Image (cartoon, rainbow, N blue to C red):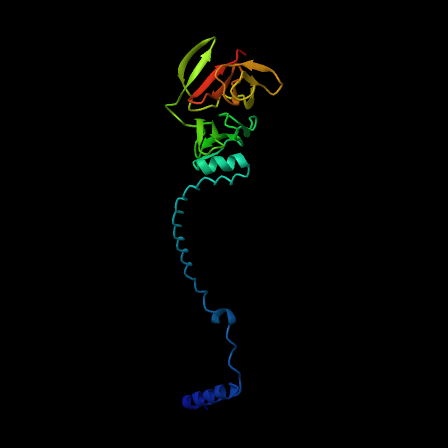
Length: 227
């Protein structure tokens, strides 16, 4: 006897349903499949360029250093008479700086100093008289003359405005009492006859020739010594 087709189908369905377990856990997710793809980060922006530094302002030139106040008594007198002068000794260490003597024969001590104008290099001899006031030979002074005697011949000659030729200078004492001067005596005691002398003189030696500058009561004179 044959089984009806409908019953077989129902029976198979019932069997199939009965085979599925009721408490089966769900499958675990695949970790690789669950991981999202990495997100590419945007490149960091380039740093902004640093602002250019402003150029430093040009520095002003430093003013020349002020000359120290003189302490030598002769230089103190010179600067009191002519504040525009200063000592030239630092630039000419081989030369005498100051000397004293009675250059005009009045019995008072006069001072002589190696000087130059402030801010200048021209050298000269400043004379400060014991009676007051002063005079200047060289150191930028122009238009000055003296009576120059060489080999027995006398003429008017300009006084140089720069005595940078000096190899040495000094004060030479007058030879003889006042009113009867016969010339000058050097540092070694040697005597040199010169006419018209009233007081001490200034040796100005250029190295190849030497002379004595002196005040005759009216003007400066220069007597070459022949050596």
